[in-house]
Image: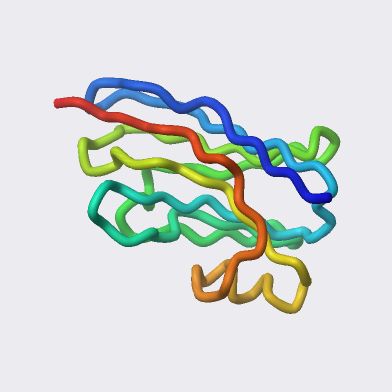
Length: 125
C-alpha cells in the first residue's frame, strides 16, 4: 500500500523560507512531484523529479524552489525560498502507479494516482 506523508508547512512572512518533506512508503516509481492548491483556485504543479534526476519547475517558482531527494530515506524535499504571498496554498506530494506515466507527471500533465494528506503553507506580507 502506497503512503505519502508530507510535513514542513507553516506560516512565514514574505521573503522567508520553508522546507517541505514527503516520506514515501510502498511507492516504487522513480518519479514524484509537488502540487499545490489555493482556496478558490485549481490545483497546479509546482515541481517534479524523475529517476534520472531531471527536474521541472513551474515558471512561478523557478529560481526560488529547489527539489532534492534522499533515496535511502525515501524522502522528497522541496526547499522554498523567497516566499511570496501568492505561494500560500495546501501543498501535496503525488505519484503515479506506473513508470509509463512519469513523463506526464514531470510535465504536470497526467492523472495522479497517489496523494499525501497535504501540508499548509501560509505566507503573509
